[in-house]
Amino acid sequence: IAGITQAPTSQILAAGRRMTLRCTQDMRHNAMYWYRQDLGLGLRLIHYSNTAGTTGKGEVPDGYSVSRANTDDFPLTLASAVPSQTSVYFCASSDSGGGAPDTQYFGPGTRLTVL
Amino acid sequence: GQNIDQPTEMTATEGAIVQINCTYQTSGFNGLFWYQQHAGEAPTFLSYNVLDGLEEKGRFSSFLSRSKGYSYLLLKELQMKDSASYLCASMDSNYQLIWGAGTKLIIKP
Image (cartoon, rainbow over all chains, first blue to last red; front, side, top):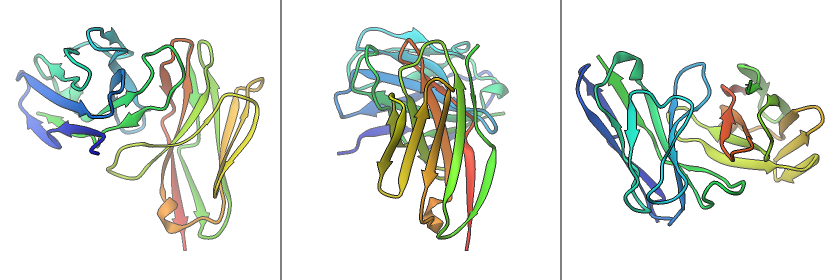
């Protein structure tokens, strides 16, 4: 069982380019999340999805978009990357659909550098 | 506002006991999570507390006081592999996690 996979593992991107980070889970979890992690700061929620077909904005959604066409996949798109989006991006999932406390399980992360 | 505070860094000796504190202030409360994160890796779940008191799980224990907005993670019989960052997160009224910046624990032989 793979759990959650993310691709790519790392990427260097020129400012202004479009980039999609991929996230796939095989646990049939209802909820999925995208976080960014920056040195000295806690994980910050970018976007989330409580169930397939629905998405919501987190704490830092500007410059990012997501879609949730099915249960397994939750891609994160940077429409026009800027240097401040340099970060480590983690995808996570949880069984519940946002209506109950539940443990979140994390993918291995994508290290993104925008120059 | 919502805020999670925990120490930035702690140092302890192999075989000893260490307590990592966390204070939280969130809009509503649906429990307190602790995660472990080794350098360059993903966070992994350690514990969840929603009721006051101590939850013990092997060498690791977690405590919660809802009235004080306070939690701690207790690690006993420290091993070198326990060197990692420990993340405290409070679940708010919308079932979203609000994360602290993490405590980097350095274990010395």
